[in-house]
Length: 81
Image 1 (tube, rainbow, N blue to C red):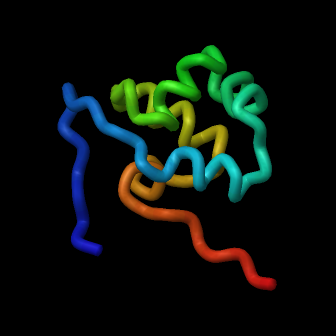
Image 2 (cartoon, rainbow, N blue to C red):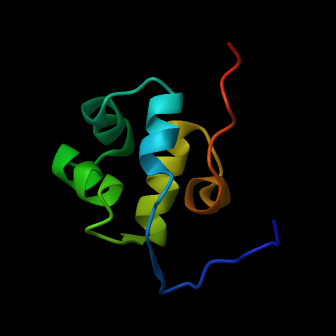
């Protein structure tokens, strides 16, 4: 994937947020608590009815133990059977 960069004042949709949360075996409530935000915010971000600021992306990425770039632009790896 080509290297993409964040715009300081940008807002980003998180199309892979649900996949990363499920990959880490977390509930929405667990992710919200770990990231210091409300569960309703996580729901809106997962449903892509709300865009995320860089600061929100950083909190979610830390809670999910991924980079900001992974969270925004990459799906999690496939789990082996």
